[in-house]
Amino acid sequence: MIKQISVSVLPHEAAEGSINRYIMEEAGVDKLSITGYHIIKKSIDARGKQPRVILQLQVFINESVQPLPAFNPELQNISDKPHIVIVGAGPAGLFAAIRAINLGYKPIVIERGKDVRSRRRDLAAMNKEGIVNPESNYCFGEGGAGTYSDGKLYTRSTKRGNVQRILQLFHHFGADDNILYEAHPHIGTNKLPYIITAMREAIVECGGEVLFGQKLTDIVLDRNCIKAVKTADGIVIDTKVVILATGHSARDIFTLLHNKGIEVEAKPFALGVRIEHPQLIIDQVQYHCKIRDEYLPPASYSVVAQEYGRGVFSFCMCPGGIIAPAATDHGEVVVNGWSPSKRNNPYANSGTVVAVDEKDYAKYGFTGPLAGMYYQQMVERKAYEIGGGKLVAPAQRMGDFTENKISSILPDCSYLPGVHSAAIKDVLPKEVNEALRKAVVDFGKKMRGYFTNEAVLVATESRTSSPVRIPRDKETLQHTQIKGLFPCAEGAGYAGGIVSAAIDGERCVESAIALYANAL
Image (spheres, rainbow, N blue to C red):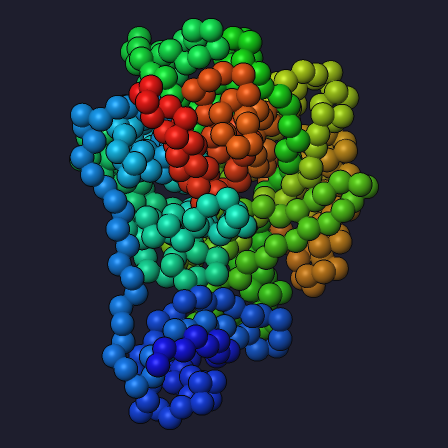
């Protein structure tokens, strides 16, 4: 007999696999009847004084343990098949390429940035020297922003596609087994580059192409139909289909489309800071303890509030992580966060952001389809100016921020380019600053210990999502104006994270092939 059960166990029992007595009680069988089990889902319940691990199990009773179904990535040789052009080698682009191979088509991926290994030098230059390469940074390059935003794989996009397939593909290319059953799966920035490299190598081995250092500079049209794409190096690729997966920071692409008369539109996004606490404080807040149990992972949190009619929320929370520079051009400061697989750094950080929209952009004179982009850019440039250059970020202790006091001394911070004591209100628009100021106090009421002057606010967290949407048909996913153009994932305003971007990449390829199979 095979039985599905759920058990609640102590953290050390889950880690040591000593859970048979719980299985016996829940399944109503004796110990000798239990021949084995698989973990289907694992989560942590920290609501009580003693955190518990909740395990959903597939238990085998009086019969041989059957292996979990094998996953087939369905890779095949497509070197002589019709091609599809994919712009961008982030999660959406790479998973779109794998899906094209599954369906018997050759992906040609063009990526403005460098491969993972070469990209590391440019990241080092950002962290150590404050120098930005506009074509190769934390946002642009192999794997996109996802490679260096630590591989959080949690998503609510279950209705949009097959989440488990995305996780299985990550696992196939080298991710640990636990991403298949953890409630909030996470790969880690130290491991993601090897997985992304393995995906690219598989695409090439199957006959696909991945072209680095090839920035898209033009989309050639013939009566509102895709005819070809051009790159900065003069490469021209004839194609009837383009999957546009350029990410939320490709401002030049938004400008290119707008200048060509291809419809784009302003959309709301969220803007704020990255807040860093000592991890010990977050552990104490969430686990109700002085010292975290060694069998529990570093604690995370998620908070949300409505302040002055605006949504304020935490975003991309990184336990045991660091704050990283995410600027994509000279003269701007943008911050993001990531964690290694073990999440063993001494700090916890989270984007904490405020919703903004077209009415806010207009207050500063920005109107039209690119208004949100210019508003975003305005704040990032102000952060650079106030920080003093070289990607140094303006920062303020949490208590000082709420009291409008410049921090005389800043706590240690994981942000490697460095922080400069400044008033965050001089960086953020007034409406954002006021909502954020009220929210951190309210978050402290919900999570006792969160509000502390040991926490530091680092500006700016501004790349939460694209400030521009590229409109597409809900059913076909094709651009509402241009035939053969499939705006995809975060850069088009239709996804919010690695898994949802990957799902959207797959869906766009499937739709493109369904519509244009006979024309490719």
